[in-house]
Length: 494
Image (tube, rainbow, N blue to C red; front, top):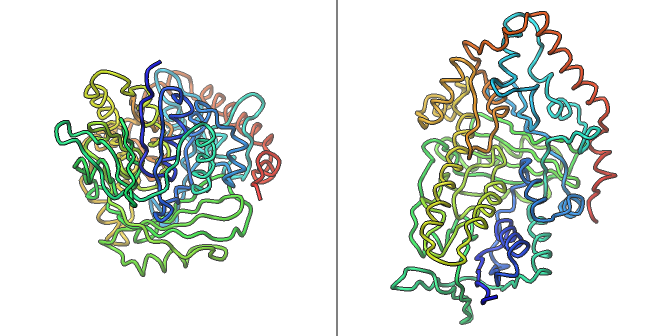
């Protein structure tokens, strides 16, 4: 075996330690991994909600679910409750589970639309176990042999510490220090080494930029441009604050729209994470802070922490011998909890394309193409929540309701409004069920529908739908209380 490739991870936090752990766990005998971080530089550490893809990533990389949940005070998440998004006073749930039973020709909602037109079928919510369990505050990892679709609420700072411990035990070397300079080869343009304070230097063959919004390597040193999406996603600031819990944790995240932005509420075992996302165009920092503190429960554990960001992405996430992972590659606001997911998919993509030999250029081109498609698909899904609103109570919502949107999203919305058709692209994270729940939840109702719902006579269709909703209710009755399940499955470590 030849010499190991020297990989240098710049930055810690969730992105840095997920990167280090993933690489050492699966490629550790081929790589020499060094992670540089400074205790003086804080991490964002507020990304406390996740989506179900995190479970698959943990399975790939040998993370024990119960151990992880105990270490991070985690709770379970079955979806997101959206309050006041379509119109003030309205609420819906984007759940993670399958809605009804679909087939190769049509999604289930087409049958439901036919039933709805004939005056039966109830609510679409009646056909999703995860959604009804979320509303009822119930949870188990599976019913009989059928697993539920779930994700987690977690303490992001504790998660980084959990991954650090595992990474170091597998051979990752952590170097404490602030990066003062990035040395770039004047001929090749590749990064050669990172200069630290006190005249220290860390050389490497391949560099991974996990320096957060700063983008110290890919942005500052290599000059990769940032594509600004703030004309579509105008929010550029947030406040985050932790509070004591006043009730048992619910198995869902809450996203509460206000006149000038929206507020998150994420229940952990030992506390609640809260924050408000807003646009400085339409709201002052003082007003946003006051709105947040006026709409929380429990006592504050921390002072409200301000965050500033610009929504968008690096034109290329891989340039020369450097890949950006996490916030250094771009930022999409936390509305659908995609931050950790985009870290993990980037890592899986990187390991498939890792430059062990030969030219990096075609590998980087493939990585960048897939990354762009993925980010644009997630971007469109988030824009949908803002665009598809009936709110006209503030400049903030009037801006979103009337703005031009990407052609790709306009096409999706038009074809759904016309005949209810939805689809999932190869790189699109969000399944048809997700698009349907958000579109219908915010008042985009199809004018026409597929004919598949008319294949059965109405009486037979009604019987089939009753069977499905009855099965959901029977399984719901088998589920224990969410908090009771946590106490026996993964109680937090003291």
